[in-house]
Length: 329
Image (cartoon, one colour):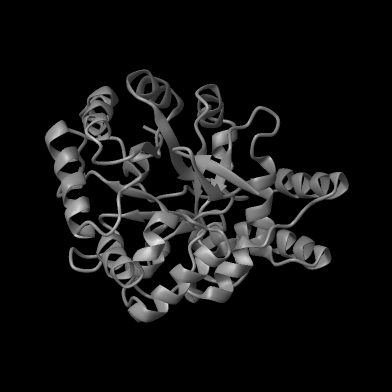
């Protein structure tokens, strides 16, 4: 199956680039190239990266500049969404800063690839969204970028932004342990305005794969250690949901990651939902191919999954107290 963004066909599963550069010890660049090529081979051509996904000399954009220099034929295959707009003191949605962020992203790509969508990673609480969107739209009208996306914004912000310019996507965390958008109005606002939801962390930052069995399985320096859902009693209680989903996946004959991603794709455009495009991250071709393998469910199986979800309340916030106030602004 395929869908479209900016009139270009993309696979129903995208590819999150964060883990290739934003970690204490990034893998060898050639291994990242192998992963990126593998994503295209299985149709995951909607790529999502960030200006701040790593240091100034090694982030999503510097990695892609090297990749597209080596594989220029792949540039037209990729629909690229880039997050920026984060200043020294946090989100900065002012016209001057947002446009300087876009300029920097374009300069880092060195002409090897266009930016199809640009999004501010978080809404600036001190700048009206209308100003931020209008600033990005100037670059769209000038032909410097393709379109506008939003990230971690609330329903009212989505509606206000859509009155200023065409919004092509809204990125927010969605997974079997982060279903908030279906109850807080975000999915509804996106559906109203025909805006696809780009679902980041669809495997729950790795927890739903079952590979993390205790907080100590998370490497030192990994920011997940700071997240409430991965700490102490919260972690132990949340693992009950993971165990139940793993048991279902084993019975189904698929991996837990495939279950998590395919369920979100099942929800896409159903029961009044907007289109949902999961963007799992992965660093190896084998994991990328696993994530791109779609699983179909019978009505009985869907009922069983829904029953599992209803039995468990996820404990702890998605982010710590420093970052939580910037969510769904």
